[in-house]
Length: 192
Image 1 (cartoon, rainbow, N blue to C red):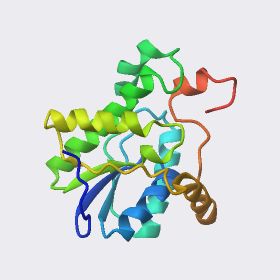
Image 2: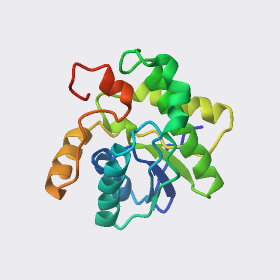
Image 3: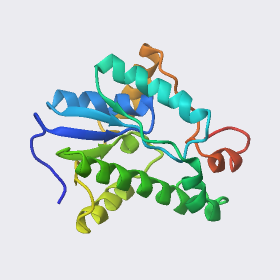
Image 4: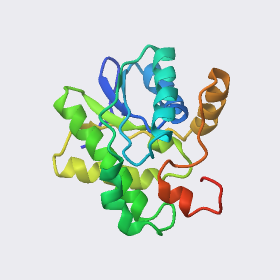
């Protein structure tokens, strides 16, 4: 069952896709009294870009004095399940598999490491379906996999706009594509 109660004093693992999106989620969680740890698990992001985003997220973690967990980065894991969908449209099946991998890994890590719950910054982006993200987390919950999910749609109340403004104010690198080679290759030369 999703958690919908008071989060004050609760240990929350926040799966973070990047520094800017984390900015749209951290403040609402902290203002509600949550004890936030950032979790940078994103095997979908190509080498070079992964490190650049990790550096940006590290700056955000330092700004808020938050712990940051960075599991080993293995892009080949992403390619293994995503390559059959290399030409799929953005937001399609490949993206669903990618989000499911990241959400599942966060859920399991949260449970294995004593967190009260977990959530994700993926809901900050207007390009990601919160409905899909919540359905992935619900399936994990139904199968009793991982910790309890905290369903927060961080794009609400101008969360995305706020994340963009804060990234600019703090000088945080803000990328212009999702991070995987397929999103870049399937574009018209502009990273999406």
